Image 1 (cartoon, helix red, strand yellow):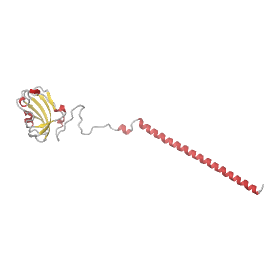
Image 2 (spheres, rainbow, N blue to C red; image 1 turned 180 degrees about the horizontal axis):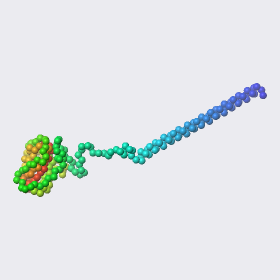
Image 3 (cartoon, rainbow, N blue to C red; image 1 turned 90 degrees about the vertical axis):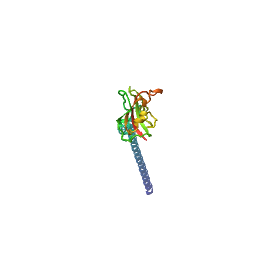
Length: 217
């Protein structure tokens, strides 16, 4: 074999060796990429599974925070009226809390000869003067039987009117002037200072009222 022919054969072997090396390198790279892709897919699948598990746990039932959260409660200090009951009245500052509830009024004893004012709860506000407009809650019953015929409590709204100027019955005009705001008084009123014999559908005979003075101005 000549020297020239030997040189060409040597070059051909080197090229073949280089081509084989390049092919091996390419195959190795493809394998690495395939492994990397597989690992990435496994990682993504693991993340998705974790997310689904967490979401599934939350959707299966309330979280601990929601389960332990207290139910809504009424505002502290707000009056809690029974369903269907009239709202509690707005009481003057410093008033006896008893004025927030309707009083029980019973019948009188014996014959009523004159207007009688009995203080049941003493208020701490100013005295009512003639010409003022007063705001009251009241219950009215027949003196002899104790049967109720009128009540601002049942209407759920206090009554306001001028006092001492002839706008109400004489027993109220005379019995409530001088009473202090925040008081609860009982008025035993003879028929002649109330509605007389009850003509026109009014309550007749002697009457008894229990009146709360809520405001005067």
